[in-house]
Image (cartoon, rainbow, N blue to C red; front, side, top):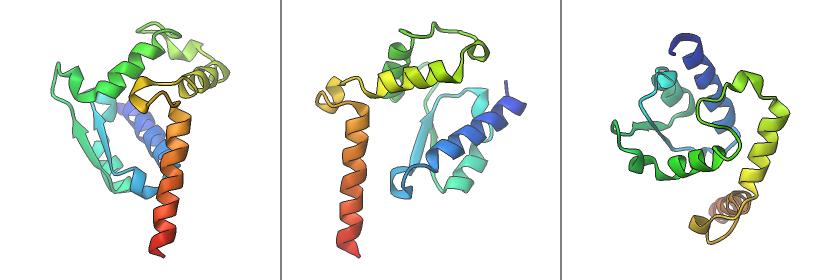
Amino acid sequence: MGGRRAADALEGFTRQMKKLPASMRTSLTYDRGTELTCYAELMQGLNIDVWFADPHAPWQRGSNENTNGLLRQFLPKGADLSTVSQEYLNHIALLMNTRPRQTLGWKTPSEAMEEEIAALKSCVALES
């Protein structure tokens, strides 16, 4: 992988993480895939810490592994994403983000994120 794929991953992570308030993007835990060989640039560009899980230790990224399992309901492992439309990927994201999760007290990820952002804004308003 590496090379162009690493540059694409860097651009994608940066674009998506910049959508979050800075206080919600303090770190990223990643596996040891070659697509994140540009991690130093990500750390510097977003002022975040990047942590790497130990090899063969999926429990260190439990939420990620669970999400991968849910994603497999739509896309089999090893699926060629270049053949999948952006519209379908957006549909999958919508379904996954509006699906209640036990780990979130049966809230959806969208609801939990909205609550976190509202709480953060409330704290910032109180500090001002």
